[in-house]
Image (tube, rainbow over all chains, first blue to last red; front, side, top):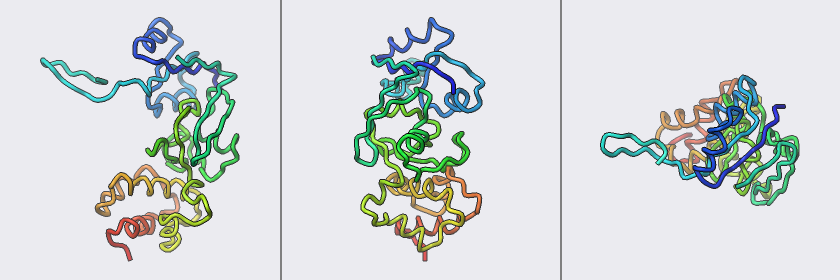
Length: 71
Length: 162
């Protein structure tokens, strides 16, 4: 089995900090694709899985012609 | 922030109303936690890659394929499995309807089909045969019992059947 740390940060900034500077870290949202590729097909490797599933990243909105995904 | 080392992930979750505490490798899926660590084998492992729906359970009331959810993701959440639908041994109305309509042949997909069907009723997606088929499309049945599965769900939903 692949081994990795499982991390569930409390806020968006924490999640970004854990992944942005580390090429061996990855985000986990729903998991349908990520866990398939990570656990089953083993075509991606990661040392740290950062679970963003409970962060308030929901919905799509637009203002002034800008489309926002996740807020 | 919650940081868990891969070798010692502590997960507390509620399964069918019962609190369970587990220490698991971080890569263990909810499906394997149920089957291999809790001996709850009602939930079936079909394709193990999210394509067949045999491992469907409810996570906080929503359908998920448990083979593509980490057990660690379920900390503090409520899981309902097929075992939770008949806690006192009395079959759930959907289970009874599957029996009446012969909604299975080999039975391997049946637990997933029934959990999905129960969610379907809650979601209000049983308005027509077409809608039931569409919203049950994540649950494959290689025996091809679809007409009888549809009839069973239709009966419980009160939208026809025999």
